[in-house]
Length: 395
Image (cartoon, rainbow, N blue to C red; front, top):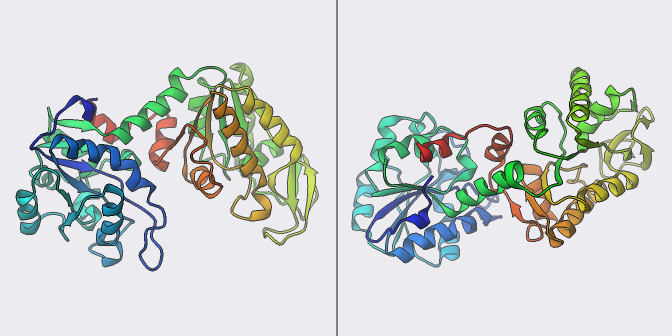
């Protein structure tokens, strides 16, 4: 996979697939610009070389040409982050786009309209990809967040640039961080998996079992493991049909000498609400009518010991209902232990929607080694899959 740093883009029109799928408020104001900031180094490199970046992105899940999802809403933010005026085309392909691109020179930036306004993008249409490819002399993929999609702009288009396709700074960083956790990280390696369901994490658990020395299983999915071992979990969330799977995971861990940390106590509530009554219960003895909502003090003490003694840490998923203030303590503390461990020299990678939301909410993003920008792409990488967008750059 060739890096942008292996090439000089002087006088070239460079098609860059970025991931500017940023959250917008009801007033269409960008509420988190970190994905734009993440693409800055790649765009800056092209500008510095004397090239012309032609930016392509999607935004949301529009059904056809929907002004709600137009990239016009984010032009000002892009200009603010990059410090360069942006020429917006109002269309993906067409006469206007061709003219704007042709008339743009070194140091100027062109932004195409939302790729997903065209059904051909998601369908991975070859003709559409070919038409897009005619806009540039080189192609750069810097959109790790969509690398798991076989879309026209992420995997099909690369074939039209057999010698001129490159990975951007962000994509390289993402791939490197995952490689570090899965293959080259210093031992002991710790995986922390949280979230509600075992079923959504089973492929990851199976794939990382050979890579980690320790595994913390927290959040809602812990109750399936406790129930499988005969514990009383009250009204806590549980996948009844996955209890035998949970037991086989514990058995596999024993075989592979992977130390498993399950919570031993939880903060329980008498209803799923921030205003509920609470008590601390042993996780295997939760009274009927009560449900586990967060990791308890004893569990957190055990998790701390596992985190502080690890050199490489992967965190995917919260250990409680962190969206409710009264049940966010466990996830906050977990994040703080990871921050401390990172400060002492551990490498920490945070990925997956909820854990990324948590580190941002509790201002921990600058205290860990790397926060992944790609939810689904990150998870599929951890499952051991080769992502179409990355495969296309290596072929």
